[in-house]
Length: 507
Image (cartoon, rainbow, N blue to C red; front, side):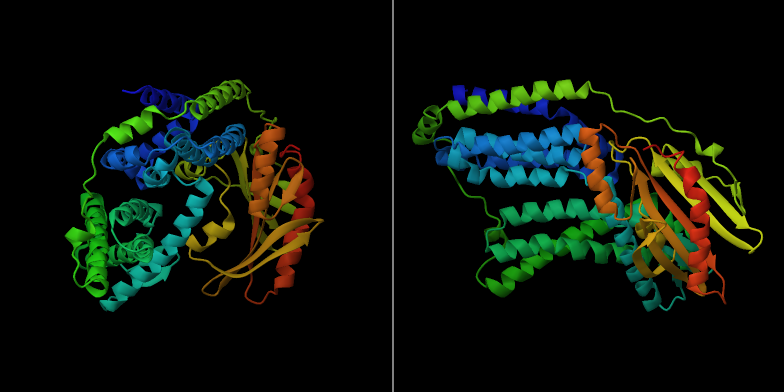
């Protein structure tokens, strides 16, 4: 191995050490979530592509580019921000930038052949939980709706309520695992790899990659529809156990076949003399000529040494940051929250343990309050998180409401008692409910969830705190009742409850 090769290996080892927190978190999620189980294979595929292109890389190697040092500086700044705020996505994206920077400071222009396999690693990076929840909810609704259309096409009477498919005798719940994400990410990875090896124009490559999204959604909907038909004829066992998982593998293989049929069709329509064999033929490139070996040996070491120095300095700084414990404010358990608030009398309710585990909250308040004079009822819910650094955070009602079969008829952001709230009118058949919700913590009350995320990020850096709460109030609207009356009821309860709530959510 040349001195330059040894330097590259050393640089990779130091890079892995510096980025260990983000890489280990991705590794854990590959094993914990089936949606990302393909992540184990992505690095191996990237290494294979680099090995297969090694002749081109060596022959194209040039003097190191100092632009790689500047790219590395940007990557390390993102790394520091990610470490301080524990936003693993920033750490993992920073790792990709650092690898590109390493390529630039070692082989220079040869990076044009290493860029694609490095970018492929993006498909092994898990999405942040907040984006994953939002995407899952959207895909659940789309897949449920299209799946019901397939069932109805087979002349089977069915009723859809949110993500619940009602077949009369049986009810099928389209849960998060059936949203299609476990097919979407692997198929997008396959689409990227296929587009990379596909010898054709850019628009065809882009089409092959982008078409993986509608293919996944349609085929997952088809799977849900088929399960519904099978359940209607042969019972609920058709939707459970091994058969359910086996159907999933069949659908993924079907998605891959459709993808390659699309490529075959493109070749037939746009390249009459071509074939799939010629479209994916591997170029014969010498593994290493005398010229390419000379190129590698004559490369400058200075940019690589600067790269290593930057990494070591940042790594030492991160070791210092890791020793800084997060601040957790004192929190009075919600079990002590008063059940008598003026004219409102409440009763505590409990969530199922599986729901609590799924939401990942530290403490919660769930209570039904009644105003005896007005015979009015409402539900009061507060989810408290002492830390949101590990990806857990409140689920926005705007995402969760449709999954329960409710339709958002009206959404407004208004001022209530001097602070912003989200006012949502929801409907399910003839039933109507009015929902107020907001995010509260660190002395702020914020309605916009994205602005709340920004403040959470800022406070994680400057205050070393990521605690916060979601507050939600829901009331039924009676058949002959106006929206104004429902608004008045919620505002009356807010006036009584907020002074007490502020004692439980620390500034």
